[in-house]
Image 1: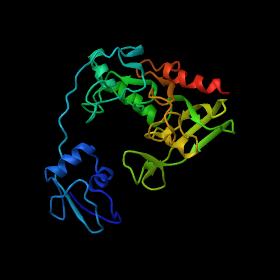
Image 2: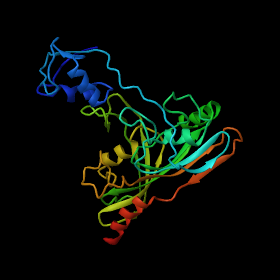
Image 3: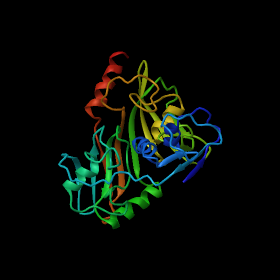
Image 4: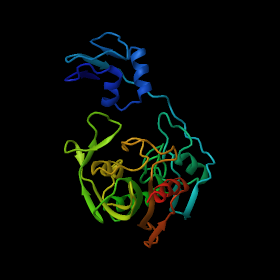
Length: 299
């Protein structure tokens, strides 16, 4: 791969490539050290300051191979039959393995729990129809066979699945309800983040309803009409009310390390076999309640 540098005067080589390439920082740094990444056909340091017109050549960077290991993570399964299961994911748990997170994910726990999971999303995402962020707690539906997976995925695409979240956000929201209609795409300065942007973006709609107001924060219910990466977190940051304890989009000091105050509280879908509508709810986790009580005390 050849990359010609434009308008990045003074940016470090490693930082620039982290934004441009879908590789981990550690793999990019190793590629620079091993001469798999060259600038103007010469080996340079990862701290090399790029200049306009520099030419970066990148050989294939292979990440370390991962192995899927079943683990007894004592998942909170709130419903299960031969086609689907619904799991209540704790805050801090990554949904599926990736480089840097090969174990202790929801998928590792699912593999231990069930011998039957769909294969449509590939080797490292068995059963996974949709995701929620690692620091977000709450409900996910999981497909136990490919037929069920396709049926559930179609409902997602048709926007007929009920998904409601509870969030604590910074600041007092004056309106009782808001519809946020703002397209989301990759952040142009940080590829690991998403942002509201008109460029290379997809339509994103979030409906907000105020539950309770506090002196410095607001408890809200959020309903997704679309399902973009980090949608709620990006939209709340966009309207100036970021999620409390969000480590990426929060813009404020974290209260503690117990996870962001965003919980997937409700999920509803039509069962792939019986065609019955199923609806599930999950109570707020203790870490969320702990932070919420801090705001209630100062109300």
